[in-house]
Length: 96
Image (cartoon, rainbow, N blue to C red):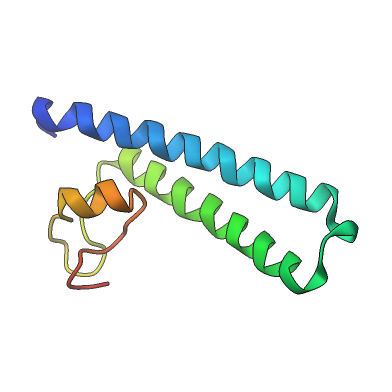
């Protein structure tokens, strides 16, 4: 990774770590008051928090492995604009 790209990637890492904390807190809050929640939306909200945790954790793992920013399908570089919009993106715009 070039030094000019490293700083923006670190900013995305910070965003991902923050998102991970938010999703984790949201899940903990939902589970703590689960029986009081509206059953029609409870499962969807829990699933959304779990998906957010999994997506951000996978993106952080790809960063540590050096594969972040590469499409899992075709191997091409994911456009920086896409990563800024969706930091946990696993595929380029063409493959998604």
